[in-house]
Amino acid sequence: MVSSKSLLMSQSLSMQKLPRVCGDKHVAAFKKAGWKLNHIEGSHYVLIKGGSDVHLSIPVHKGKDLGIGLLKKLIAKAGMTNEEYIELFYK
Image (tube, rainbow, N blue to C red; front, top):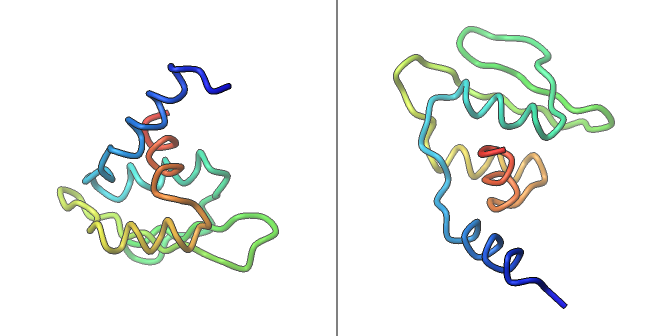
């Protein structure tokens, strides 16, 4: 049986929008999911995860939010759902 608290939490997460913030805050969220900073190329932070051939390249520009389309692609490339990402972001 699903508790009403967990049901409310899952409903509120699915209704939340992806955060519109600078790239450095998204880098921190991906780190919570186990991604590690490999190197920085110019203004792009390149993250890797052990056991994966995938890398994430996240632009970090002061005062400029990461585009939602790019964020969705990064989330998918990381093998996560939007809901999982939102949960990690606000953790």
